[in-house]
Length: 121
Image (cartoon, rainbow, N blue to C red; front, side):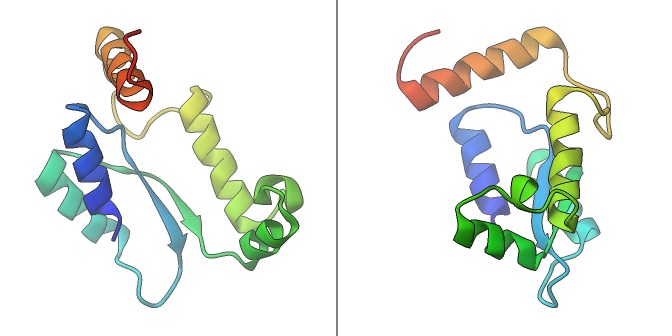
């Protein structure tokens, strides 16, 4: 489970996490959405799943062709889920919870830029 990476990154950046994206959903070994939200909620506070990207053979085909799945097969299940996630990210679709205040978001973005580039913004 890559939740541990999310926890570590949030701690390193001394930052909040908006939510989780669960990838390759539908495999028999999957942890349920409720289990993931429960685990992450205990670790980082209330943390919802923003979107579930289903297991989709079109992803591998698109990868072999060197094209994003959303371009290769826009109507595939994974492409549709990625499109829904993009709507959340750009603000066209509401978050599944009340958003953070703008000053908090601005400060977090500055910290992320500093962490990634080593420069002050």
